[in-house]
Amino acid sequence: MHDLVRKSLAGSERLGTVRDRSVGADPDLDISGWLRALRDIPTGAVTEGDFRAWLEGPVRRFFAFEKFFGAYGYLSGGRAHMRSTVSSGHGPEFLASRAAAVDVKARPCVEWWLSHRRGMVLDKTMATDAAGARIALSEIEIDDLDRYALGALAQTGVIDPFANTGLHLGFSGVPRNRLDRTLAALELITPVVHALYFRTRAVAPTAVQLDALTDRQRDLADLAALGLTDKAIAARLGISENTVGNHFRAVFAKLGVRKRSQLVALMR
Image 1: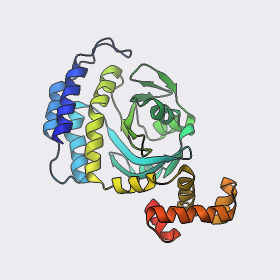
Image 2: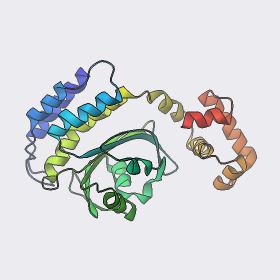
Image 3: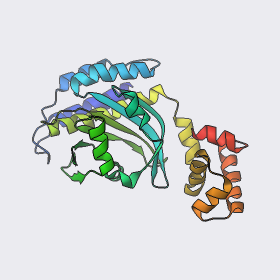
Image 4: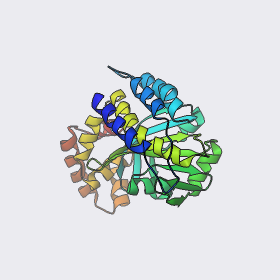
């Protein structure tokens, strides 16, 4: 964590002197507030409660937000699959509405983020990223903002392109009047939030195992986790049941499982 703090300090110096950003002039960040947040990073074994307390206290004093939702997952077949989540401030209705897998193309802002890796702020019907690009929201994204009273929503995250996995972060209720400051602060906190999140969860081994699968094998594993039979999977993918069986035998061997129920348990 000390290396991460040093890198963040270097980032603070860089962002503190930014000029003429496309979304505004000098973001005038409260660097002293960020330094205080860094000093308060939990040490030792970190629980989800420690992580949430750090967000709700030191981070919120530096980066104003009302609610937070983070999701770790992977991409397969044009869909983003959630494997673990953490939240702060959201009610049970919102949390229950988060699907285990979503069609990326149905959410233009997620698709844009995956392609450009830049933070953005969603507000009403449009999103603006850190380079000034504007992305029209889909009806699904607009409905999310309205139904759950999210206000302006800052979205970002970190992608591992080798494992095709990533952590997506959403801070709702961020200030609307200083987009430049919000996006600059978002860029600053993201790597630290990402690193601390991973200290609360043992997700890396699963990611490494799934990365051993081909795209076709991951598609089959995803469909098996949804409860589809071999016949249904064959029809969905346009292949024979015999080919489905061959793929599953290869999947079992790579993941060290012996039967479908063990595969499904691993996928969950």
